[in-house]
Image (cartoon, rainbow, N blue to C red; front, side, top):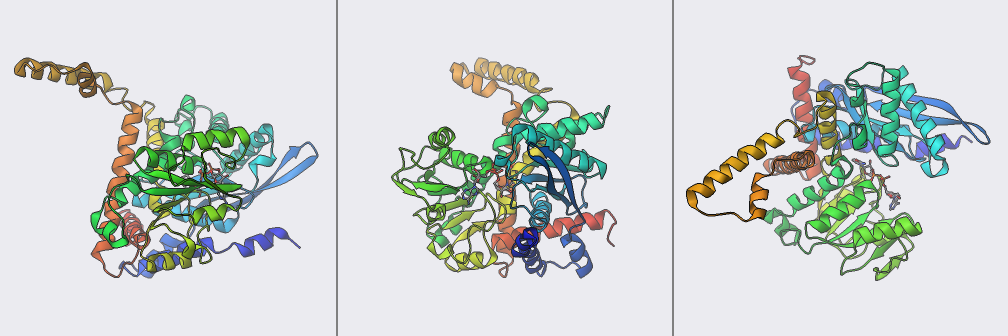
Length: 478
Ligand code: NAD
């Protein structure tokens, strides 16, 4: 039996779920059916296979790149390295990218890539070979380029893989001035941008902070406003999960639970996220961390412990009809893409909770990827041209005010006021502004139409309207 077919048959619901959410939201818009169909469909699906040489012989690798919508160029989306990856999943994730970019006003279409491997089973050299060959295949079919399609990290990939992609693309496109804009999430030394690595998790934390700041909504679900003292459980201690947990703690929340695939830990007084991360790095497991009061060998039990906010930041389909009733959380903030099944979402809402939907909650990554792409096209770091000028202007102003008032500022006050913005500060400020504005835009849509029953539907409605607007203003649609 072809096990690939079996796995795909079992898992062909994710794109369908995204389409169902789309269709449900579309009834609250007034666009014609043909345009809605065009927005919803995956425009280009490229499935390919390539061989790599291993110690025991050749192995054929399955891979995908899906460009869901070219209503804006380039298209944008991460590359997932996972043995669970399949065409349906890549299509769903590409579609989510389209809506995500629209929600946070990033002028890209959505795309996604997948390489069907478990990176842990391959040597560094093999991973490099796979990544470079994957890039060559994309180049051959015109599925990559700064103005065509720009990948980024996703589950199982990071800065290292993005460097190999950038280097391969630049090597095969000699003299192309903007070549480094072919991929984002690169290391700083290879024209990456400060703040990209932590952007998705930071964005998740800002999204939650914004959500809990609305008194009316918190009253409805029986929570006080503000993050201070709120108990959080995070699933997945990878890029998104680690940074979500870290910034939530920084913003005043108490991280009481952390779940990884090997198990979960809990302490109602709080866990030190960095110490847990270091413990896992040293021992290979989250279990055995001395600061935990409880341990669960079954990782899913970790999600069911007492908390106010749950951040699933690992993979899709983690909260289903089977476990949603056991959750204590009043807020689910979807750090991962598609972690809550539609059935579970309905039950969670009936129980009086709020779900901050993935396509908004984890949009911080693509927002800062957009900044990185802009940096690559402009060939200058943010702040480089104006930082010193700003500092001199501020200095003159402070000197003048001190002279006029006779009040001398402390050295600390002076340096805080005078300081010009660094690239990291500008990136973080752009990210924060984007996450805050987008949250309230979604919430306003939610409040404006009583029949819109979830923030996810409201987010879809906003995204559909913006994408339809692009088609219409471009003259692509009458
Ligand atoms: P990652 O590979 O850095 O981390 C994922 C973590 O989840 C790993 O530590 C892994 O061990 C853990 N994990 C796997 N299965 C688990 C399970 N069953 N229970 C608990 N933990 C488990 O990946 P990432 O980049 O953090 O991506 C995580 C999710 O966030 C994905 O859904 C991805 O699509 C989404 N996302 C990522 C980004 C980004 O910038 N990296 C942006 C937007 C969305």
